[in-house]
Image 1: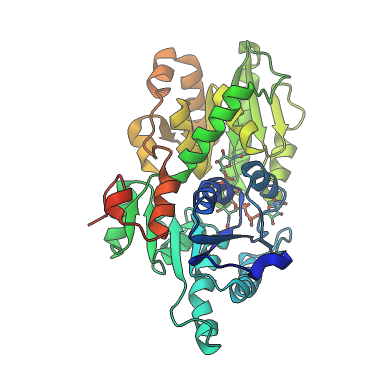
Image 2: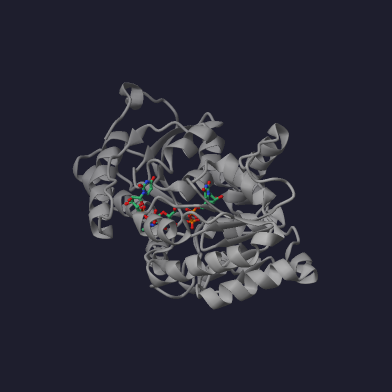
Length: 404
Ligand code: UD1
Ligand code: UDP
């Protein structure tokens, strides 16, 4: 664990530890860190767990989020249990040193789950050593997303369910997610705040627009871009092969129609291997490194449509008016599907080819899906969360309503 020497000095009213493990957690917690740091009554420290490194640190730098603690847990191909064990020990040390009043986790990664669990367990240490008489309060940002299937997405569905039962605050992005928590008996401390990804997207889109950023200068403006991302564990193996088969077939079919496929490939070796093996050296398929957030936002804005199994991209695409075909069997984000900008198509090559071709060939169908809609927030979720964490009343600060 690396920590700066000035870590102990604070005379602020409360101390909050923000746990960030992976790319989407950085994007979705950066606005919360910023909102909390603007306050005078909260001492805020960030722990980067090291679950992601290359894909995380540049994003934190872009958002101006300083890492106060950085754990060293990355090992290629390690089992989830090994990752969880290292995270548990590392996060205990961070909590023992900082002694937070509040621990904030986001989403459903192993870092988020272990962050909540380590905070819950830390009371044993604090109580025995006489350092605290009350447990740290756990806050869950993006609470209540559910598919109802413990193995899809795996392990995220169980991670987020378990976090839900340890929380003092559950910040649900939509009423649907608050309703899902209520069905599990979680009603106390539930607030519908909107998703902080919209805060990050609005701010970054504005900067991208003003700077005229163009991360794909090699692709002429006369071309249409299909943006592809994938990384879900359920799609390792067969699913990913089917996705690559579909992209290969579509690339050949639409080569003369000026369609270019852009695929920032996740650094997970289970993804890198098959994608490069099956799609390397195709003229209109561009396999590129994972992008920093402003470049990826610029790519989404420039794209014609998006093929993805990502959670965050399903939330961002509707705001940008980009049709998104979700290469999964289910989704915990049904709002975009209901709004008509996202469609669940599974991860079979035939279906991916048929649905993508339909959108590329049928202008009317395309226009029906390419409506800018935003079921996920108004860009003010982080401020609401910061206010609630600082003890300000829900009535005064919360524009939604507390779940019954
Ligand atoms: C993780 C999360 C997933 C989230 C995704 C966001 C878990 C179990 N999975 O999946 O919920 O949607 O992040 O992208 O928490 N790697 C690098 N450098 C990096 C990042 C990853 O080399 O910066 C490689 C390493 O070999 C690493 C592997 O990718 O072992 C897998 O990373 P891991 O965090 O276990 O899973 P993800 O597939 O990234
Ligand atoms: N993203 C990014 N660069 C990329 C690909 C994605 O910044 O090259 C962003 C994307 O805009 C979204 C987030 O990363 O906000 C989604 O991360 P990911 O798909 O890895 O995880 P998930 O959302 O599925 O948990």
